[in-house]
Image (cartoon, rainbow, N blue to C red; front, side, top):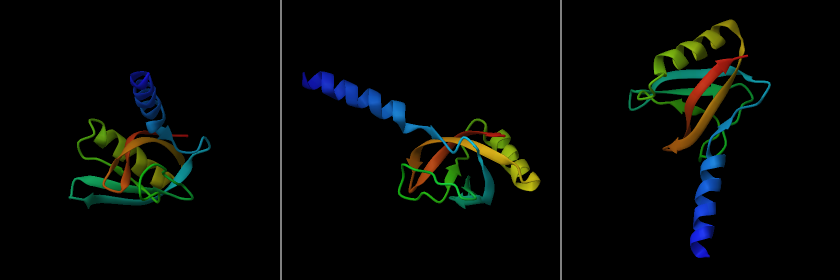
Length: 105
């Protein structure tokens, strides 16, 4: 019985670990390349909150993300054009959520 409970807890935690920002999207706030160890970019959203880690005011686009250049370009384009974006994020690096993907609305 206790194995069943452990398996269910593991499955439920992985299902709910990653999430999207608001359906309506947010405008990009701060873009700080090299914010952490010189290889990750800190991103904040106007009126956006990233839940699940100690800090909710922004998230990190890690330098080892295989789509780093494309995601960074998309976020920068959204900032310059004033467009809304949605960000898919999950897991923590230090105190921040980790950005996995993003798209412009």
